[in-house]
Image (cartoon, rainbow, N blue to C red; front, side, top):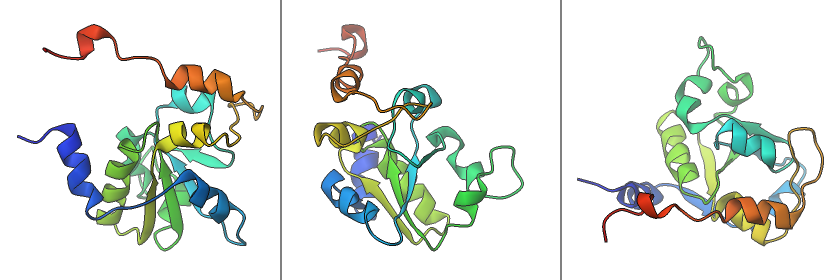
Amino acid sequence: MKTYKDLINQCLQDVAELYPWDLVERLTQESPPILLDVREPYEFERFHIANSINVPRGILEPACEYGYEDTCPTLVAARDKEIIVICRSGQRSVLAAYTMQLMGYQQVKSLKTGIRGWNDYEQPMQDNLGHLVDVDATDEFLNIPVPTELLGPR
C-alpha cells in the first residue's frame, strides 16, 4: 500500500518543479507561462496569483479535454505551452502535473512549496475581486493547524 507522500515522491521522479523566485523571473519574460491553480474554488477565491486559471484537481482530466461540462479551452489548447501548476503546498500540484504529462502536456511543472511558498516569498496575491490581499492575512489562513483528531493514532 502506498501513502499520499509515497505517491507524491513517485511522481516527483517525472515532474519538474520550480521555486517561487524562479516563477517570479518566468513571469517577467515575453511569453510567461500559464498559471494553473488546482486548489478548491473556496481557496482560490480568498487569494491566488494574478492571472491564474482555477481548475480544481478533482475535475482536471475533463478540463483538459473538449466535450465535457468542465472543459477549459485554454488548457485544451496548451499541450505544447509552459504551464505551472499551483496548489497550497506543492503536493497536489505534483500529482496534477504528473497526470497532465500522461495526457500529453509537454512543458508542465509544479510550483515547489505552492502558494504557501509564494506567500513566504512575499509575492503579491489577489482575491476573487482582483483586490490585493495582505501577506499576513494569507499567512494566517495558510497556517491553520491540522485538528488533533485528523493526525491519526500516535
